[in-house]
Image (cartoon, rainbow, N blue to C red; front, side, top):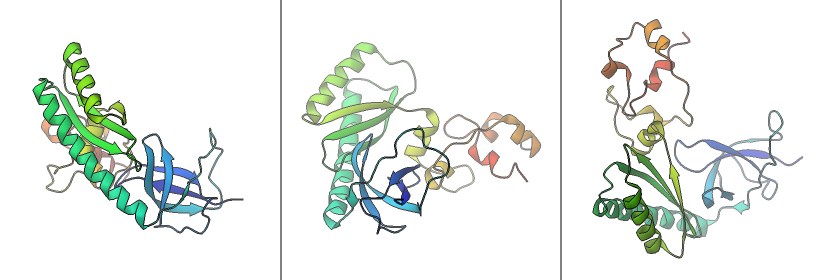
Length: 216
Protein backbone atom coordinates (compact mmCIF):
# COMPACT_ATOMS: atom_id res chain seq x y z
CA UNK A 1 0.00 0.00 0.00
CA UNK A 2 1.47 3.37 -0.98
CA UNK A 3 2.06 5.99 1.71
CA UNK A 4 -0.20 9.01 1.98
CA UNK A 5 0.69 12.47 3.17
CA UNK A 6 -0.81 15.77 4.16
CA UNK A 7 0.58 18.54 1.98
CA UNK A 8 0.32 22.24 2.82
CA UNK A 9 0.73 24.89 0.12
CA UNK A 10 1.51 27.92 2.21
CA UNK A 11 1.83 29.18 5.76
CA UNK A 12 -1.25 28.48 7.93
CA UNK A 13 -3.00 26.95 4.92
CA UNK A 14 -5.25 23.83 5.11
CA UNK A 15 -3.54 20.52 4.46
CA UNK A 16 -4.57 18.33 1.52
CA UNK A 17 -4.22 14.56 1.33
CA UNK A 18 -2.02 13.20 -1.46
CA UNK A 19 -0.82 9.79 -2.56
CA UNK A 20 2.96 9.76 -2.15
CA UNK A 21 3.52 6.69 -4.35
CA UNK A 22 5.66 8.56 -6.93
CA UNK A 23 8.13 9.48 -4.19
CA UNK A 24 7.69 7.16 -1.18
CA UNK A 25 11.08 8.22 0.18
CA UNK A 26 9.93 11.76 1.08
CA UNK A 27 9.77 12.57 4.77
CA UNK A 28 7.76 15.00 6.86
CA UNK A 29 9.15 18.46 6.21
CA UNK A 30 10.19 17.70 2.62
CA UNK A 31 8.78 19.63 -0.33
CA UNK A 32 6.89 18.08 -3.25
CA UNK A 33 5.36 19.27 -6.50
CA UNK A 34 1.66 18.58 -7.00
CA UNK A 35 -1.33 19.62 -9.08
CA UNK A 36 -3.89 21.78 -7.28
CA UNK A 37 -6.95 23.84 -8.29
CA UNK A 38 -4.48 26.76 -8.49
CA UNK A 39 -2.23 24.86 -10.89
CA UNK A 40 1.15 23.28 -10.29
CA UNK A 41 2.46 24.26 -6.83
CA UNK A 42 5.21 23.34 -4.36
CA UNK A 43 3.92 22.12 -1.02
CA UNK A 44 5.40 20.80 2.21
CA UNK A 45 4.61 17.36 3.62
CA UNK A 46 3.25 17.87 7.17
CA UNK A 47 2.38 14.25 7.96
CA UNK A 48 2.86 10.80 6.44
CA UNK A 49 0.91 7.58 7.04
CA UNK A 50 0.52 4.16 5.42
CA UNK A 51 -3.20 4.80 5.04
CA UNK A 52 -5.79 7.53 5.46
CA UNK A 53 -8.54 7.42 8.06
CA UNK A 54 -11.94 6.63 6.60
CA UNK A 55 -12.84 6.25 2.95
CA UNK A 56 -12.09 9.08 0.60
CA UNK A 57 -15.09 10.46 -1.28
CA UNK A 58 -12.99 10.90 -4.42
CA UNK A 59 -9.77 9.36 -5.73
CA UNK A 60 -6.78 10.74 -3.84
CA UNK A 61 -4.46 12.63 -6.22
CA UNK A 62 -0.79 11.78 -6.49
CA UNK A 63 2.09 14.15 -6.03
CA UNK A 64 4.22 14.48 -9.14
CA UNK A 65 7.73 14.38 -7.69
CA UNK A 66 9.95 15.64 -4.88
CA UNK A 67 10.70 19.34 -5.28
CA UNK A 68 14.24 20.09 -6.40
CA UNK A 69 16.25 23.28 -6.08
CA UNK A 70 14.93 24.56 -9.41
CA UNK A 71 11.33 24.10 -8.24
CA UNK A 72 12.04 26.08 -5.07
CA UNK A 73 13.58 28.92 -7.08
CA UNK A 74 10.60 28.93 -9.44
CA UNK A 75 8.28 29.00 -6.42
CA UNK A 76 9.96 32.13 -5.05
CA UNK A 77 9.84 33.74 -8.49
CA UNK A 78 6.13 32.91 -8.78
CA UNK A 79 5.46 34.43 -5.35
CA UNK A 80 7.32 37.61 -6.29
CA UNK A 81 5.39 37.98 -9.53
CA UNK A 82 2.14 37.16 -7.76
CA UNK A 83 2.74 40.08 -5.38
CA UNK A 84 3.49 42.33 -8.36
CA UNK A 85 0.25 41.17 -9.97
CA UNK A 86 -1.68 41.93 -6.79
CA UNK A 87 -0.32 45.47 -6.71
CA UNK A 88 -1.16 45.92 -10.39
CA UNK A 89 -4.75 44.77 -9.82
CA UNK A 90 -5.19 47.15 -6.88
CA UNK A 91 -3.90 50.07 -8.96
CA UNK A 92 -6.12 49.12 -11.89
CA UNK A 93 -9.14 48.75 -9.60
CA UNK A 94 -8.58 52.27 -8.27
CA UNK A 95 -8.62 53.62 -11.82
CA UNK A 96 -11.92 51.83 -12.45
CA UNK A 97 -13.28 53.17 -9.13
CA UNK A 98 -13.88 49.71 -7.67
CA UNK A 99 -13.50 51.00 -4.14
CA UNK A 100 -15.78 48.34 -2.67
CA UNK A 101 -13.68 45.45 -3.97
CA UNK A 102 -10.65 44.42 -1.93
CA UNK A 103 -8.05 42.22 -3.60
CA UNK A 104 -6.60 39.97 -0.93
CA UNK A 105 -4.25 37.46 -2.53
CA UNK A 106 -2.86 36.21 -5.82
CA UNK A 107 -1.50 32.72 -6.45
CA UNK A 108 0.65 32.10 -9.51
CA UNK A 109 1.26 28.51 -10.53
CA UNK A 110 4.78 27.14 -10.74
CA UNK A 111 4.74 27.24 -14.55
CA UNK A 112 3.09 30.72 -14.36
CA UNK A 113 0.26 29.59 -16.65
CA UNK A 114 -2.55 30.07 -14.12
CA UNK A 115 -3.33 33.10 -11.97
CA UNK A 116 -5.84 32.77 -9.12
CA UNK A 117 -7.11 36.08 -7.75
CA UNK A 118 -8.91 36.16 -4.40
CA UNK A 119 -11.13 39.18 -3.84
CA UNK A 120 -13.77 40.33 -1.39
CA UNK A 121 -16.56 42.80 -2.28
CA UNK A 122 -17.29 44.93 0.77
CA UNK A 123 -20.41 46.38 -0.81
CA UNK A 124 -22.32 46.52 -4.07
CA UNK A 125 -20.20 46.50 -7.20
CA UNK A 126 -21.19 48.28 -10.38
CA UNK A 127 -21.55 45.50 -12.97
CA UNK A 128 -20.30 47.59 -15.90
CA UNK A 129 -17.21 48.80 -14.08
CA UNK A 130 -16.48 45.28 -12.87
CA UNK A 131 -16.79 43.85 -16.40
CA UNK A 132 -14.53 46.56 -17.81
CA UNK A 133 -11.99 45.91 -15.08
CA UNK A 134 -12.01 42.15 -15.74
CA UNK A 135 -11.41 42.70 -19.47
CA UNK A 136 -8.51 45.08 -18.86
CA UNK A 137 -6.95 42.88 -16.17
CA UNK A 138 -7.12 39.68 -18.22
CA UNK A 139 -5.68 41.51 -21.22
CA UNK A 140 -2.70 42.61 -19.13
CA UNK A 141 -2.21 39.10 -17.73
CA UNK A 142 -2.54 37.34 -21.09
CA UNK A 143 -1.65 34.69 -22.17
CA UNK A 144 -2.08 33.39 -18.62
CA UNK A 145 -5.45 31.99 -17.58
CA UNK A 146 -7.08 33.96 -14.77
CA UNK A 147 -9.45 32.49 -12.16
CA UNK A 148 -11.43 35.01 -10.08
CA UNK A 149 -12.22 33.60 -6.65
CA UNK A 150 -14.61 35.44 -4.35
CA UNK A 151 -13.86 34.89 -0.65
CA UNK A 152 -15.71 35.65 2.58
CA UNK A 153 -14.85 38.15 5.33
CA UNK A 154 -13.03 35.60 7.53
CA UNK A 155 -10.80 34.51 4.65
CA UNK A 156 -10.20 38.15 3.85
CA UNK A 157 -9.01 38.89 7.39
CA UNK A 158 -6.74 35.83 7.24
CA UNK A 159 -5.15 36.99 4.00
CA UNK A 160 -4.67 40.59 5.12
CA UNK A 161 -3.22 39.58 8.49
CA UNK A 162 -2.41 42.24 11.05
CA UNK A 163 -2.79 42.38 14.82
CA UNK A 164 -5.69 41.52 17.05
CA UNK A 165 -6.87 43.51 20.10
CA UNK A 166 -4.65 41.28 22.27
CA UNK A 167 -1.61 42.82 20.62
CA UNK A 168 -0.58 39.62 18.87
CA UNK A 169 -0.81 38.54 15.23
CA UNK A 170 -4.34 37.46 14.35
CA UNK A 171 -4.84 33.76 15.07
CA UNK A 172 -6.28 33.10 11.62
CA UNK A 173 -3.13 34.45 9.96
CA UNK A 174 -0.71 32.91 12.47
CA UNK A 175 -1.67 29.27 12.91
CA UNK A 176 -5.33 28.51 12.10
CA UNK A 177 -5.80 26.32 9.02
CA UNK A 178 -9.59 26.06 9.27
CA UNK A 179 -12.38 28.19 10.69
CA UNK A 180 -14.50 26.76 13.50
CA UNK A 181 -18.12 27.58 14.23
CA UNK A 182 -18.30 30.34 16.85
CA UNK A 183 -21.49 30.96 18.84
CA UNK A 184 -22.52 33.73 21.21
CA UNK A 185 -23.03 31.20 24.03
CA UNK A 186 -19.27 30.75 24.11
CA UNK A 187 -18.83 34.37 25.12
CA UNK A 188 -21.61 34.14 27.71
CA UNK A 189 -20.11 31.03 29.31
CA UNK A 190 -16.79 32.85 29.74
CA UNK A 191 -18.41 36.03 31.11
CA UNK A 192 -16.99 38.02 28.21
CA UNK A 193 -18.52 41.42 27.55
CA UNK A 194 -21.19 41.11 24.87
CA UNK A 195 -20.50 44.56 23.48
CA UNK A 196 -19.92 44.17 19.76
CA UNK A 197 -16.39 45.70 19.75
CA UNK A 198 -15.35 43.27 22.50
CA UNK A 199 -16.41 40.04 20.80
CA UNK A 200 -16.00 40.70 17.07
CA UNK A 201 -12.81 40.45 15.08
CA UNK A 202 -11.52 42.44 12.12
CA UNK A 203 -13.71 40.29 9.86
CA UNK A 204 -16.85 41.51 11.61
CA UNK A 205 -17.61 38.01 12.87
CA UNK A 206 -17.35 36.59 16.40
CA UNK A 207 -13.72 36.21 17.42
CA UNK A 208 -12.23 32.78 16.81
CA UNK A 209 -10.45 32.89 20.18
CA UNK A 210 -13.81 32.56 21.93
CA UNK A 211 -13.68 28.86 21.07
CA UNK A 212 -10.18 28.22 22.41
CA UNK A 213 -11.01 28.15 26.14
CA UNK A 214 -14.71 27.36 25.90
CA UNK A 215 -14.31 23.55 26.40
CA UNK A 216 -12.63 24.08 29.79
